[in-house]
Image (cartoon, rainbow, N blue to C red; front, side):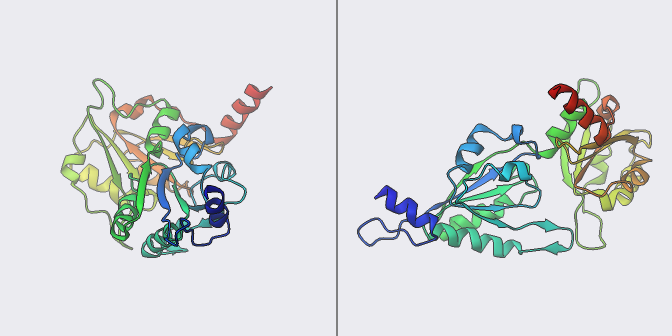
Length: 276
């Protein structure tokens, strides 16, 4: 029976339990981490390798996608600014529909499913449809970016708190945030999806009292071979951000004074040296 179910899943057929009853599959919201396949958790890898269908974000690296079963169906639901291949509602309906066909669905998301990954919405959709949904956490980009740069998000005497915020808002608008709280000294502010809003974000923080000389770090493609890091200040954040185009984090806080800048060529040289 188990073999027939597996074969049916591979062919995308409705799987029955032998008595004519539909066997519902399950959805796994899996965090793929920031891009380096070695930062994928053991549990994520085990779940991933049992998938019938992989519904993945555009930020998931090719090296990680290569770990999927050869016969698993792959569906890209890549989202870029103003260019979505599928709306979030369509993604929700898609993963539910696959599970109701009896398939094991891995919804593979860059970073962690619950850190600006809209995993909560997908979890709610599964629950509403009566579909089992499991969450496998992943290393979110902020952790990889700060660790790679050697700049801790929390640090005695420099950062007693860390806040994750999104720089993404409706077109032409800046994010609606508590700027006065974020402007307090001795805390770290990590801004996801904030490149295009770097100028207004920096201006609002300084207007709310954050010192212009506060260290800041920009990390593009954290943990990947083409990772790029630039150390600047809050007052220089907007100009520095204009030189980046890929997926990047903005990190502002006193602890970023410990960060080490790096261009992709430097990282490539280190990898080649380690392999020699």
